[in-house]
Length: 138
Image 1 (cartoon, rainbow, N blue to C red):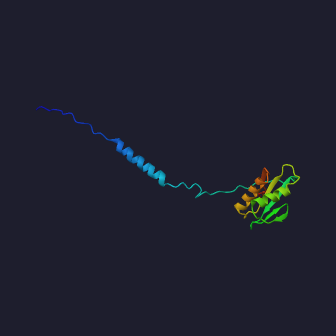
Image 2 (cartoon, rainbow, N blue to C red):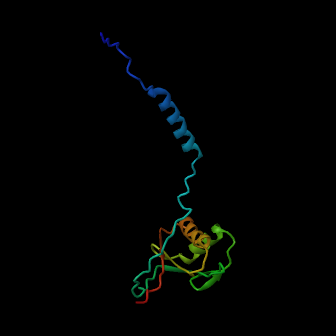
Image 3 (cartoon, rainbow, N blue to C red):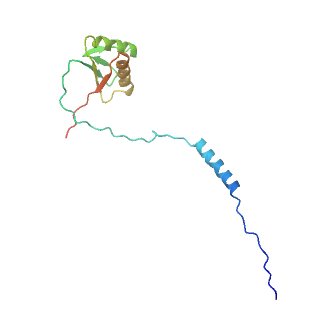
């Protein structure tokens, strides 16, 4: 008996079509995926260990109530627009050297009302804005 070995072709796996299909899938996933960074953002705001407030002559105290009312230097101010609020800051800062706006916002005050005060301070040319905090109880 004569056994003859016939050379057999090795099986080949053609990778090019598989790579094409994977690239199409990756492109499809990239286009259809939504990136919601802030959807489930849970934050805990830190409490501050505040020391006794230093009285400075160049401070402009701004109080923002939870209902959106503004007080500048303990005088009620009717909010019309940010430009009007900036004009009120200019009047309050008249004669002050390097005025500082101190924002005393209520815990339930809206974020927009605080942003309005910051924007008005910027428009009035006041470079420093600080936030007043309540001392954390231990």
